[in-house]
Amino acid sequence: MQEMRHYFGGNPGSYYNHMLFFLSITMHRVLPKSLHRVIMLDVDLKFTDDIKKLYRYFQLFNEENVMGIAREMQPVYRDFLSEYRSENSETRVGEPGPDGLTGFNSGVMLLDLDAMRKSHLYNKLLNIKVIEQMIGEFHFRGHLGDQDLFTLMSFKYEQLFYILPCNWNRQLCTWFRDHGYADVFHQYHTCDGDIKIWHGNCNTTIPNDR
Image (tube, rainbow, N blue to C red; front, side, top):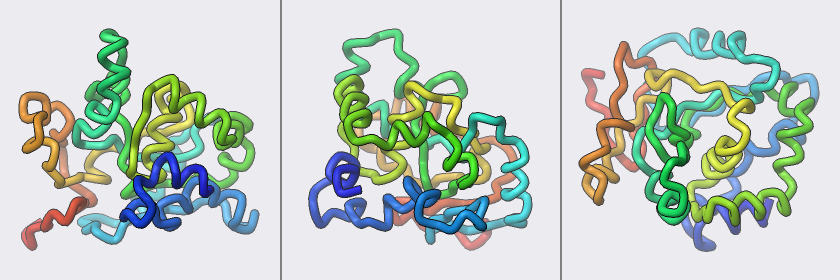
C-alpha cells in the first residue's frame, strides 16, 4: 500500500496521500467474507433520491465487473496523460465519454467484494511490478488516490468496471474549465437527466435548492 501512495498520493503530507484514499483498493482482503457488497461514499455528497436505487446497480454488473464507478466529469486525465496522448494521437485514453476512456471519480463506488476476491485479473493488477509497468506505458503521473489506480487499470481492462450513470455522481467542480480546458470542458461535464447525487468536489458549494 505504501508503494501505491507513492505513485498515486502525491507528495508526502498532501491531501490524497492519506491512507483513507486507498482503502477501497484492498477492502476485499481486509473485510470478513461475510460481507459481500459495499457502497463507499465521499462526505461532500447530497442525495436527492433513495440510496436503495443506487444499490440496485449491483444487479447490472456482468461476471467480470468488480465495481461500479462513475466517469470523471472534468478533463483531469486528459491533462495527466498529455505526454502519452501526444505520442498516440488516435488513443481513446483521456477522451470524453461515452466512447473515450475518460477516467473515474471515486466519490461514489459500488464494490462487489465477492467479485473482487474471485477476480484473478483484478488481484494480479494489484502487484506493484504490474502497476509500475502500466505507469511506464502510459507515462502516468497522478495524485488523486484510488481513482488514479482504477483509472489506470481501465485503460487496459475496461471489463473490470461497471460505469455508473453521471446522475449518481454529478460532480460540480469546474477547476479545469478555468485552467486551460474551456474549449472541451463541456464534453466531460454535461450530465442529462434528474440528478440523484450532487458531489461538491473541490469545495464546490451545493445550492440549497438542489
